[in-house]
Image (cartoon, one colour):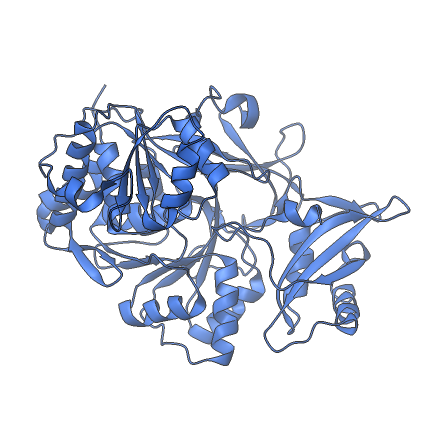
Length: 510
C-alpha cells in the first residue's frame, strides 16, 4: 500500500513548490510563514517522539485557535500519532472522559484550561505529560522551552492513507461526546469537493473562521483548507463577539468568512445599532452547524452585498457535503451535493421518495469516519449498506435543491400533522422584533402535543404577553394551524454549544 501523511500533503508540499516564504497563519496579528510553520511542526513531532509517543498513540490538544494548535495538530499526525482536538472551554467532567477514552500519554493545554485539566487528571488512572502553552504551570512542561530544544527536521512516519490521523468529538443531539476516528486521507475529498469545487479557494485567499478549530467545521475552514492551497488563515483566540469579529474583518480583510447562523444574527443586530466595516473584501460567507434561515440570508445580502453559502455536514462525514452554490442560492435551501458525495432522501423502508416528499437524508461519503473509538465501527448505529444515515429530515424540490426540515428526533405531531421546528422558527424570525427562535413539542394536559416557542427579541424590544400573542398571530397568517405555537416564552439567549449549535434537548427539558 502506498504511503500518505496528511502533514506532508499540506505544509511540506507548499514549501516544496516554492511557497515557503508565503504567510501561512496570522494569529492575533503575528504572522508565520509556511517554512516557519513547517519547522515548528517538525519540532513538535520530534518533541513528542522524545516523550515516547508512538504511532497510533493519542495526543490531546486543549488549545484555542493559535499557531500552537496548528503545529501540534499536524506535528502529532506527522509522526503517525493521532491528534485529538478538544474544546479549550471544556468542563472537568468532559476532560476526564477525553483522558479516559484517549489514554493520551501527552496533553498540550492552554493557560485557560490548566486548572480544569489538573483536576481531571487527578481522577483518572494514568498521568500524562502535560505541556502548557502561555507560561509555566506547576507539574507541567513549558511549551517554549520544550519546542525550542527539538530538531526542526522531522522525518514523517510512513503512514498509509487509511491509518488513523485524528479524532473529533461528536455528541449528536444527546450531549454525550464520542470520538469519531478519521484517517489521513479523509481531508482530501473535502478539499477537492468543497474548498476547491464550491468555494474555488486558492493561494490568494485569506480565510477567517469564527467557528473554532476543535470542531470539524472550524478545523477545515481555518486550518486544513487554507494550508492545502498555500493560502493564509487568520486565527483569533478570543470569544467571537460581534465587536471582535467586525474588528478582525475590518483589519485583516479576509476573502472567505465562515460562521454559524447565531453569529450572523448577532452581527446583523450589531450592525443595525453601530457602524460596521466595509466587507467588499469578502468573496463569500459560509454558514453551517445549524440551518441558515432565509431571512438571515436576505438581510445579510442587502446589508453587505455578500452571499452566504449555507451547507450541512457532520463530524462523521468531516465537513460540508450538501451546499448552496455561488450565484445560485435559494434562501432557506441547503443546496445540492458537493462533488464526490451522493445523497438520497428516503422513506422508512429506504426507498427514494419523489420531489416534495419528506424523508430521511442518507449520504455516501469518501470522507466518512472509519468508526467511533471503542465502538468497533459505524455500521451498527448509523450505516445502511454504503450509506450513512444522517438523522436529518429533508425534502428535495423538482430542481434538485434540498431543504432541511429538522432532525428526525426533533419532529413532532400537532393536530395530527407533522411539525418541522425549522419551519416555525423561520416564520418567527421574519418578525421584525425577533432575533432568534427555537421550537420544540410540548404535551398539553389533555395529552395532545403543540409547538412551544422560545424567542430572543432584538435589542431595544420589550418582551411581553402582547408580543407573544402577536407572534402567534404572525405565524398563523403564514403557516398551517398545526405550526402555530400554543406557548411563546421569552429568553435572554438560547442554549447553545460552544460551536453555536442549538441545544434543543435542553429546551425540551425545561
